[in-house]
Length: 220
Image 1 (cartoon, rainbow, N blue to C red):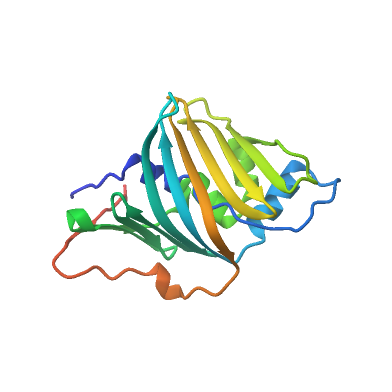
Image 2 (cartoon, rainbow, N blue to C red):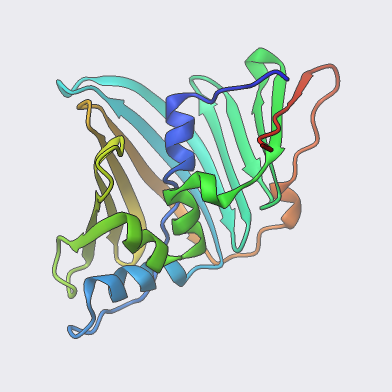
């Protein structure tokens, strides 16, 4: 069976992906985990434009991408790269479609949250699972308009050195993924719309005619 491998940025996205917005104020008595739990769980739907930057270790921008993102709990996720290399990743929580129009192909496989690591944890708001894999620290005061959380991997073989999730006035602002090789991926979230209705149809994909369909099977 033909096997398809996603790009590094795409895989990165699936392992990390959309933390969400929340509470208007934090009581000083709340712990870092309480605050992050609130920020990741007070969400039903989210739409956003995303600017993705791939930054080299010397600070130079290797690539800049424009992306449209949608999520709908518990299972819907949509991530479409518009430029420079069009690509669509969409799942309804059961099936994952990865469509690359330039290659005229779509890869279809079962969606397994256990393989998506950080992204699945953030989407589901599973803080206990997240805490099991990362040491989570609050960088800013709980009364600050800007809330920043650092996730430090516990596993020695993690590809990440540090993940930073940032909120401004309870809205998701940016995510930084610092790799051990010195490269950094930045997601800046713009025009964020939270908790407005999104149709389930947005998280389904019907392949266009005359393209190659690759069905990946990970069954042992």
